[in-house]
Length: 164
Image (cartoon, rainbow, N blue to C red; front, side):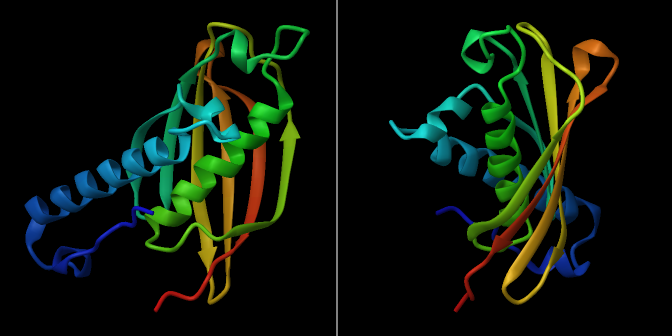
């Protein structure tokens, strides 16, 4: 699995150019992680159209334009796809904090408003806290096509393995 590689500039050495280089490295790593996760015949292939648009230490922002494959029979964003967005994007945020992906311990999603085919959805995940064995993340899913209306909020707790 791809992990974020930190250099001396993460400690404040190297100035603005080094910081910009680190930011670009984190974004590229987040994009590679998402591609790795979604590439293949597993369930995660439902995420293939999700694009990482920004990433920084402990944060990841993605976007997806909803198509028929993301919708329920009623024509709105499928709850299972929403849960997968919370799971996957928060995991990338944890990995952007230079932690392993771990396994889910708890996850909850509050569904607040619908989204429909053609809407552009923005998924913002932030790793709130990382301890020795647990990581806590929050996710906001907004509809950019509808005035940034909040579609869903999620919380995700992950058990992270010890790094050696």
